[in-house]
Image (cartoon, rainbow, N blue to C red):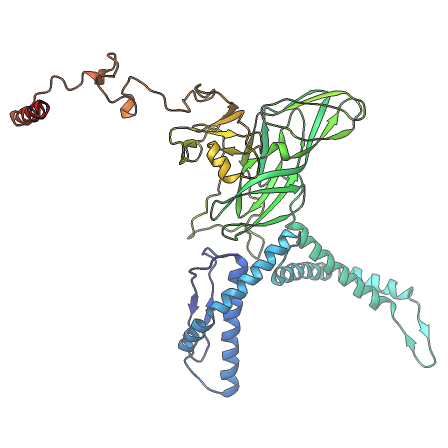
Length: 483
């Protein structure tokens, strides 16, 4: 699930070495998951502690650093493999909705709660003595033949302690649990969402989105309901990717479909026609399912209860990266401030309004077509029909009705030779009669007479040596033509 190529070990040798054993730590300032780092550090500490116990029991003093290096060389693969297995278990549990909390973190939480209770007990000793005296007055004793058996208060104390520990564990788990409607992760928003006639609200029940692997850039389709954690393995590099969709209610003043909590991947595109929505009616306050919506087209439907007409339309989709859904925290629950390690940039979606498409929308088949087409047969975007056939060969292709500008990612209706409606740039190569910085016409004969480059360099003096070369070339051409 994770490639461990290089890692750093910090060895601390005390002044009394070899009377005192050295210590080995795995520093935090390196690109390793916390689970892998913690497992490796625990394995190294177990070896040093075992060696120290053996030397003390035998009464012998030895230099153990070189044997430690030999042991590490032999067992390095086993240690890293065990750490990766532990990481895989945590990822699978995370995809199933479970969460691992280290025992040290829970122990610190319990110790902190116990210390607070001790302080409160010291401050209220007198009140507790009075309460205990009052409590013992009302306790019932059960009489036997020779002695009295007392069970009440001791049982109550044990139950109260166990309840407090359970409450502390639940609070530690709930502190890291994200809320359903929290504005975190990646926001999915529909541009120019329109709800007309009796359409009141729109809620996404099932989402179909294309995600891009964070390692090999491979794209996959994922269909998920709201609130279900999904673990997807990349078909190309087997990298684990976790995706959770949290839906939101859309209305006239909000066009947010929901939020994506992603790990190991980034969103690429939304397949609107395969998503399932719930559409609310103004007249009867009931909801019905709405399917087969498409970008740039008005979907007409009627309420199943009161038969009122409703209209829904959206122009395109927008992905926005908000606050990360799972911030990295240390053992005390504080956010780490990276000092030595540079902060990793969050990967952004490929289709973003105002930014160009990859390679400006061109492909290996059409080098001068700066746009992508959205095909209505599958609802996906591809640079050309050949790219569509290579990726989607299981269905018949329908001609594209919408396109995305390669310069600014503006989605618009298909047009043959028109410029983009947003950035006014041409999406195909246009023949021109001007210089345009060297990207236009470079032939002075075909160049427009209004362009200054047409007459540039005509008054420049030419050396005799160059003139002789030009005359010799002309003479050789004349000889070949005469022959």
